[in-house]
Image (cartoon, rainbow over all chains, first blue to last red; front, side, top):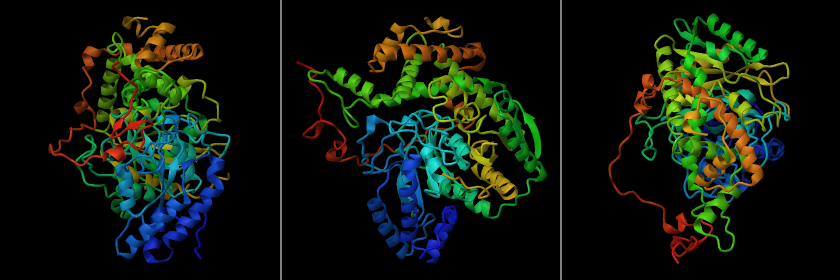
Length: 493
Length: 107
């Protein structure tokens, strides 16, 4: 009989105990199947999971273990956002368009997880095609925040974040195009890493904004964040934007981490602490900065004036890329098909797309189509790319003087369900702290750093120069070990 | 609205919404046209702030100038295995033999 208890074990500990023969992969799977049965519907975190499929994976991983393989994620349940392809397993992007789609191949990250001993435990709910900040834009209903089910979990990777926060799995994958890992991580009180562009293969990720999209991990500890990142990172020739670098080994660095930050220089991004930041978030961030000061870091204010363009630049570039990427959904090769009697090919395209896409997805496709259309390209898209270059250059200059930057992950804690759904611009404005990181291709980590008076979690964002994931994780570990927030509160749902 | 209008209070008329929807292979109801006209106008009004960027001082976007300085990865021009036809067709709503089926294009 296992001694597994909710919130009792990290992914690293599960793998360690499985290797030690202390618990079996089957016991881990049974425990998480029970939790999924009990809570997934209430939180609406899962779009697909199947106990028989999990049982088959348990057998496969047990036989690998018996053959003596060392598996970094032995028996670890991992949830996958539903815009990442899983062979033979429904992958809907939370859209009616793909409601019956079963990909014929696994994404690179899924191959890596399975090879590392993980159990693919299900597919998680999200905003349709990853377009949104609350996980309400799902054709299958909104995800709920385990800290208060009347509030959103953030988005677009809200199902993954809420499930990890509720311990329906120790870790999960999300995707981040403009903050879709970091913001839900902040709203759900867990860690979420958006890696440097090009460090995690996008092969098998259903594209939204190809120059911005990255897959990354969610976890409840820094060590698990590092563990999952190490497994999924590294070169893949099937993604032409994948860097020719070996997988990261950040976990080795963390094992010997000296939490003293003597000599480290941390920049406080002035623009992210201006109007719109709610008071509990400001106070939590101020306390977190004090922790870093006490650990010996030098703190200085940094100004990146072009950040003011990031919302505009992001929503023009992301939607322009989306308008091209989502052109493939035409009802012919995959996904649903609408075809009235006597329909022409163009009718099929139009009927299928008009019926299959939700309101926000149509809006972003049209915005992107508009800004790329004749007569508007120079006024909008070209300006947005110019702003992107300005933002990127300012980050490069900032990192000449500081090791990393700190900001809130979001100006506020989670909002109530329905609060912003009818006001897209208000929704877009809430992404102010995360968008610029994607425009510049940088790594950034959301770190839980407290709760507001309603008991909703607050997140701090650490931003580093390209390929500085290990340094960011070490910085987060120093904070985690000092502030001791992790495990001090558990969501009641 | 013309291209020169970007940067000022922008609005987009209903015929432009319908034209853009057509370019994107979408058909909108009158209600949807009104909804998107309202929302796209607000968004375009907001992004008009980019007009203040002096483009000649910044230059065109080039991914190699970004902080992450990504160089395209090349690979050998070698044939790789691809999906078997029956696997490639399994998600299609209509097929015929080893092909995707579409409505007749040429009479």
